[in-house]
Image (cartoon, rainbow, N blue to C red; front, side, top):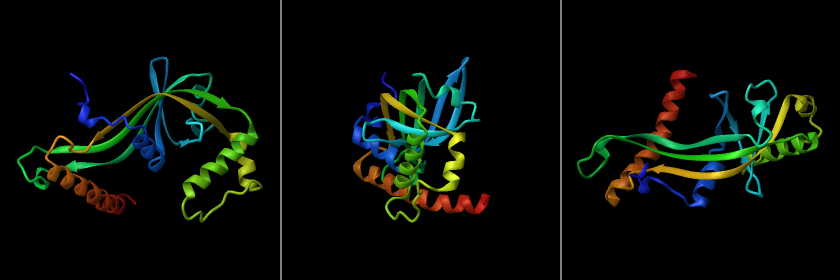
Length: 197
């Protein structure tokens, strides 16, 4: 049996790219001596279809982000519990979510000029569309931190989209679950932040 079921998989590359661009904070997983090392980093998909990232030199995962080492990535979209009360027919409780799982190989980029430009480009991407802040090339704080940041690129070798969105339900129920996902994310983020911050 295929798992997850085909109706919970999305292999349309443009959908997966949309998740990466909208939710660029990736869970980056490397393995050393059978132990996983995990870091959360924003990754930007460049025009060549490679993911570009930056990592602190003191992060224990940094030495693994080079030399064509393998890496696994998870990008997480919206998710929430779906109560049977939102459906028009009898159902069981479930959880809906969007995830993109990628595998790839990593190459360290050693050029400081490339690193600087990459940080500027990433900031520009993340500031879109308002661009309220521009990271200038002559920013002294940028210059001072270049020695403490490593740049890397990931060549993606495997793509997998996991879109569990009640697709196996009647159309009305799928739409109700979509509305619930939107509302829950808007409401729960505020409530959560009020509790912890």
